[in-house]
Image 1 (tube, rainbow, N blue to C red):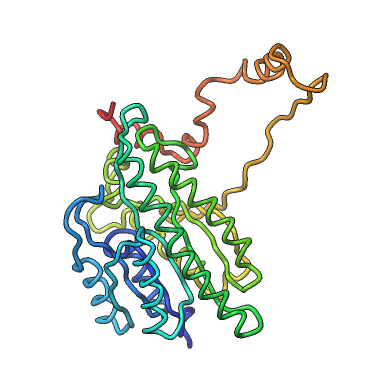
Image 2: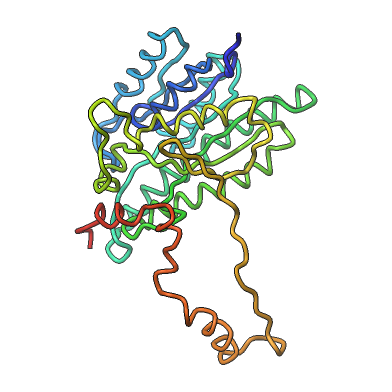
Length: 322
């Protein structure tokens, strides 16, 4: 029996550790040939010397299990290096079918204390890194579709965060970048649908080196048990979205962790008010909006965070940043 991704070629960025590693191993387990990309810097803030070690180790692990994999250690936030990454997959495997964007860094700070370089670095890796690889993969699929005279196979799975959904006081750069990834994904989904390509975005909740302080207040599993926040809970969703079975899923945002997948609806209008005259005046706005919010608790703004069960971990993890 053929594996779901047999004969397909994939790129996974940020795949040397944590979530990206689990995703690369899952795609390989399902039959895909994988280019394991990781810049290899030891610091989660993007500090330290780049190293081929993490990417090479995961690629070896895939090959040892009988799969096909090679390592790429370029910086996906660099336009030319991202182009080289896509070209590597095409030259080695004959084509590219799946792109999983996962690479990212953290430089946490409250908004009133954040330095310009802390903002720029995080937006560069997360948002520009997602764009760069998407741009070259999209061009590849568009060219293939034109040559074939019809749709081709293409899957993009991007990585956002619940920091975008629920807010994260000490991560204005990260939350903004992850919100941008959602916008990039929905735009890409519309642009590439006619070529047969889907683009979806996930908000994974996983215990990795990037989230170790966020989830510091959440219990660890008993010895021998699988952590509910293990990346292995998220990787199967990525494998599914990359597969032919997910052909009808496009432009969607999904939250995943610990055996749970939630499909997030697009924002909907909660209330609507029309002006009595041609334009609103200050008094009329106060009358309608002031009344609408008057009886609502201030904390209601953070209701999404409460529903997702994040606030306690965020508050504990961000303590001392002020």
